[in-house]
Length: 149
Image (tube, rainbow, N blue to C red; front, side, top):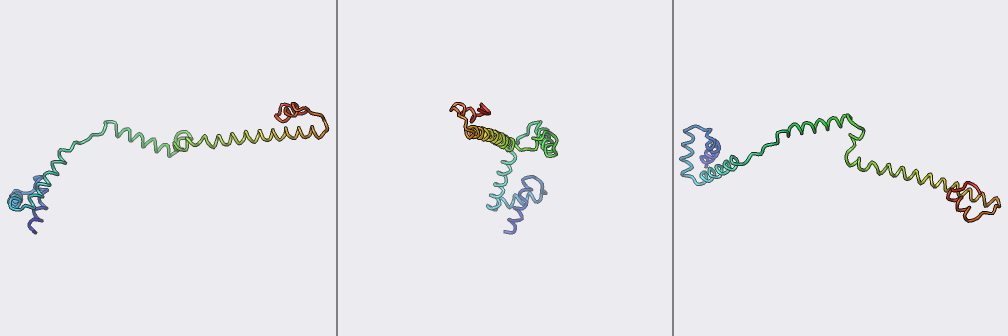
């Protein structure tokens, strides 16, 4: 059993032809007599064949240049070189119009409600003064078409 462990440690070097001739002869003699080590050598040979025959994929020629440019752009963005939107993420840029629209709409509602309040007070003042007012004139006062009757 100890002899099998010694042989199995040398099998990888044997396949790569990195061991001495004497060790190679010893391995060959042992493998021809030992089924366990023979299977181990067969399995290592099969694995080496898979690794050697595996197709190597190459990167496009400008891959490293484009990666470098992306990283430089990211660093410049982090440092603030660019527009004020450069540091804002894509998601935040899409959400940016939402609060702006809310502010604009609330301002418009406020202005219209103040105008409506003024017009309502104008109508009340006109009616409290005892003046006769037509429905059309009252509607004009409420809508802001007339300031006074």
